[in-house]
Length: 317
Image 1 (cartoon, rainbow, N blue to C red):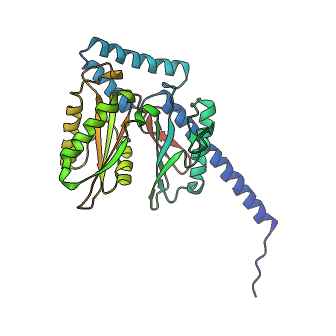
Image 2 (cartoon, helix red, strand yellow):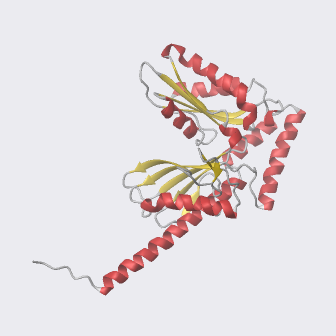
Image 3 (cartoon, rainbow, N blue to C red):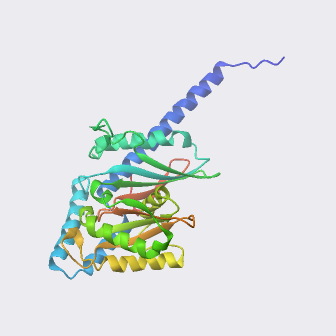
């Protein structure tokens, strides 16, 4: 019979590893905290560039003043080191994680801890209210919140984290619906128009409109939110999808909602569509919107916990 001898040195190794793991988890939570602080105060490069373009194309004197106020607001957020909008939303994470990332098992806890820390340090407005209890949790976490969507990459040792601050106004127009197949793309077109006309002004335009097309309401809704994560200026990879994006964008800009809802040339910054296969008897569509202060970002974190913010060039956490 063979015996395994457990020595004090082994215990020291285990203890040392626990300390290393704890220190690494602390560092990862701090990275998420700093990332959320950046998102709250500074718009991603693509959104800021699109707003600058829309301002240069605005004919309405009042519309130009609204854009001027938006950029003044962003400058004050940087100067005063505080969020550019008081509604810092409910935090959502979309994570693309390599299965060999060393802290994968601790990542969910680190994301949650980063949100709790950022709530106090940024500060983020406590927005999470528990259903049924109707009580604010006070730290922007709660049942299944922050919301985390996972995509695993076999063998990869880095993670990419999209974070999104979805405020109340930009969430209001969101909906999902399953159409009869005969409704076709015309039915989708009409539903988008009806929703943006009815609720777009509440979502702080110009809006980023995300559409998800798929087999069921839940799949379409998820895809519509993922569409908001794409950088402005990119197009759907399918030619017909890209054409539909362009047609909807041109058409929605004829509504004349304009910046802040005060009328103007552009009601939307862009329209993004993501799609999945569907059943022949169902045509599902989901719609999500982002406000002009579209606070989302993408960070890549490597196995040594070095990182790069891909959405905000030159940003240092």
